[in-house]
Length: 273
Image 1 (cartoon, helix red, strand yellow):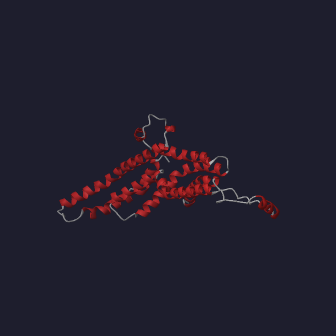
Image 2 (spheres, helix red, strand yellow):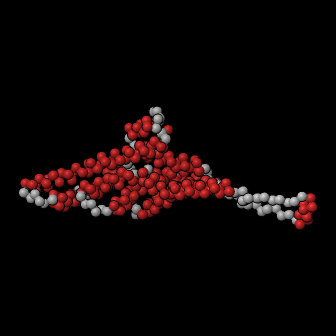
Image 3 (tube, helix red, strand yellow):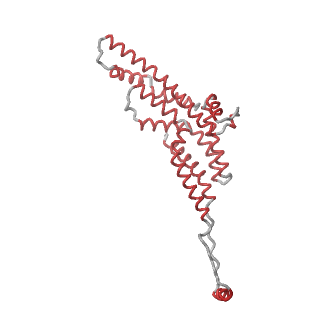
């Protein structure tokens, strides 16, 4: 049941990216070359009798457009390379993957779940949380652009607005003020905060929130470690590693309280979804 929304979200995200970056390339496409005018042999003979015919032409007159198109292709390829990092840092992925990593460390199972599974779960939860944002981008930016109702610049502005709103909703005001001060900007209304300030403020705020959630996750497992260590010391079992004994109890506690359900629900609700 979740594969269809996932595929729709992936197709929508890729459609927004390629539709917006392809507009300048279409605008810079060279015009079709017009055929050179033909000269009759009589006209050539008449011209040869009066003055020599000299025709110097280098290139087809489209070199500047070709160079511009090549530069834009290089720019698009650069964006494609950086797109995964940009998308992960502008969505809910950062907080989710850090919290899931803390769960694995708190339990003590370094190899289960594996990093691939944690990243996969984080991506699925990210698509679920960000689905309303993708829908808004599709409705307000992508579809009007494909219908040629708006230009690529307006589509970029309307497409960036839902992402900016989402990031501002999850960012602390203190972080925004901090980066506004670093940028040399004074008090600014929320709607006028530039994206270059919103992005770092959002990332730092997400890191802070994720570490706070990780601290709360560690507390019950630390209690189990203390109890096991104290019990082993009281029994005189100094050579027995406490981790070996506490690991089964931590796994049992996590299963009994339905830990994955609690963690996923807390993560989703933390974004107001």
